[in-house]
Image (tube, rainbow over all chains, first blue to last red; front, side, top):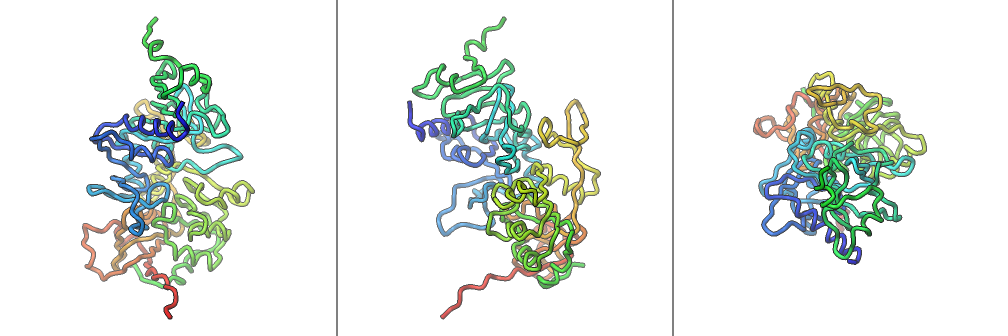
Length: 220
Length: 224
């Protein structure tokens, strides 16, 4: 089995294979942000930042930070040539209106119906939903990119989310450091398994029943 | 008519107990000097409408730290731990709203609409207590307009007619809030004469803006 950093690298690279040139993509904070630097050779996507611009570029060099150009996490960012800035209403028209091809975001929990919980743990952590609810409802594809297990070892891929939802039945794909899981009407299909792991090992860390791609094909 | 006024006079328009809306996104595009003056004057019992409450230490965060606010309507408070602490302790009433919903509620208020229909929040805690409507087989939440007594904005450039130009990601909620408050005050980096901004460049028409305040350059550390 790969070490932790290599497993996260695998997951980031795997998410990056989900796009085609020209896709408009919104990347969440943390692991999703790293996808921008892992795109396959020749694939060029357009990154949207929900605080109000298109064409998110690399982190600026030291000394060249512009206080008016930050990403949705508040960190210094750049806008690529051909990019554009806009107000929050336009930003969410782009997001909610179905003009974003994919959104990649982390999760606290995700379940076999494609429900996502990512914005609060009652009584413990209530940061707010920010733009996440609109992104998950509005983007054409919702990709959850996260470590398969919680930091305390808790299970995150469940039969049914127990935390308050960010949105109901919107997740299409779950990419973790253990594998790639597609949300289908029949349930969760484990399409790929991370190097060095077995189906049984992934299932052992997952509450929802995982289907194999073969079992999905069998029609009654 | 738009007037250029001093910082102190601008903030005297805000009274205890008022509802204010403040532009900015985690500090970017927030009217820092207007907010510092609100804190310095110790205006109290405000209802604050803003995307977030800044990062602990910045001007926005100080509104919360210095207890100028007793009710907050925001989308995200995770970057200012004091907001979460006051909320958990029952000292601050907090209403969290999806970002795309809050911006449309403000836009609706400014545009004379009775509300907006959004699919965001369906099947979540956000739908509690709200009217649902089905339009063309899709379920939506009815979200009502949100307006304020005073809007505090930040712009990069203004002419003396109040026309505003914003820069990059500092635009965010500012142009929407300009339309949805009884009194609109903008802190501006550069105030120029009428005619010096091309009409096509204007992002907020001057008719929305009541007062302009020249942003003061920060004092640099003493020389010699």
